[in-house]
Image (cartoon, rainbow, N blue to C red; front, side):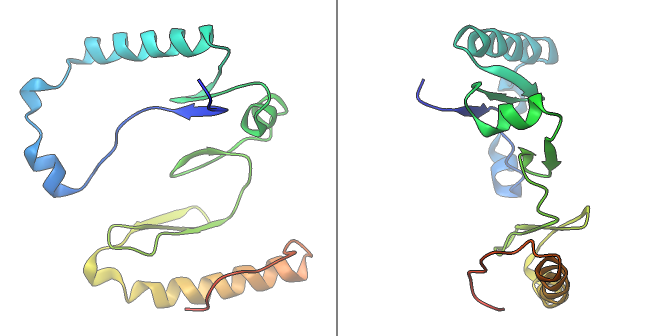
Length: 141
């Protein structure tokens, strides 16, 4: 297929998108399960390993290697090979996750970023002191 890892599922929580969906056209729960099972079988037949939920990876991918070694991490976006401790979405409707707490930003929530930046500075300082940061790129907010 050309991809080392695949995650399938549609999650668009944008209220405008949700309003235009005709729920009568959506598959029933048993149909969703059948679609999921068919997709899972197809991916397995193509050499993908089931990592969890809707995540699949080839044996050559680092996600599979982390899963096999018991070193897989999870955040609000899915499975990952690294525990970042912090993720920041800098757009309206973006998600900020710091030390296990998640917040979805609204237009009114942007002032919250000031607090996130302070937390990020503290997190980065701890990482630098622990020797865990080899390179820092980006713009200080």
